[in-house]
Image (cartoon, rainbow, N blue to C red; front, side):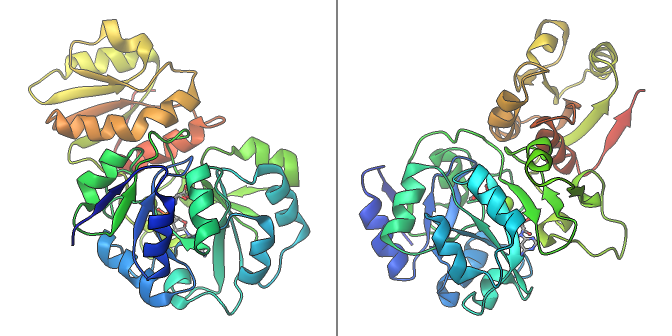
Length: 336
Ligand code: TXA
Ligand code: MG
């Protein structure tokens, strides 16, 4: 299959592909998504094949107007309305009991559906011109999510119909996922909308155990995506917990061929190994924005072991931590 490279003003071509049951990678404010008509089960099935995604991992349905949600869900409770009014369009995905219109391919056999209203104008236009869109991140299953059109092409060239080039994504990590299908509401994946913001809006929100910890053997995932290895570059990523000084000291002591550091700007002059910085230690937005590119850069540079400076878990830092600990396959060295 030849993959068309479309410009930002060629959204109508992309919409025609979607209406014919094809697959289009689109920019969103979080990461690039691989979109198909959410109400066409056959089209949605192609997403799983193109990504190599396990069929039991459900997809997010993207809308371009809050009113579209009424067709997709069985109930739209008060707390969900509050969140939608405050954070949509934006980096928040809300899970609710699904309506009968949702194909099994989208919900992967669950009785719930995840819905998001993205703010990116290209995504918005594409949905308006076609249909609500089922879209996971546009990477091969398991590798870091794409934050520009080149990342998408590296993974998906020849596997999908088209890619719309909308430049770099703003946020850089995937949306926050909260389920309101349970009471109290539960944070399943941290992202650009923070836990603090969610609690300010609707009160109690529980953090699912899988956000920070590996699933125990036999434990059921609230969000099927959490049980798979994720965001992994080819290099072996190891998270280092401890003070800034102990991080620098540990990495320098382990200097060797193929060893590098995923670090903060403050560490740059102090490390004796090759470095990829994600920004200042207290600038969580920049860290989120740069993280997935940094992981891809580590592979392009051929690093085999990458020691990562452990992020703080407040604000958007929680999302950065959640992605790095998965990239590391939960391999942590605790120097505290
Ligand atoms: O920012 C984003 O959310 C991006 C852009 C493209 O919108 N999309 C994205 O989709 O990250 P994906 O498929 O890579 O991640 C969706 C996550 C998965 O972990 C999946 O298991 C979970 O959301 N999920 C989807 N529907 C669910 C449901 N009904 N119940 C529980 N978890 C669900
Ligand atoms: Mg993904």
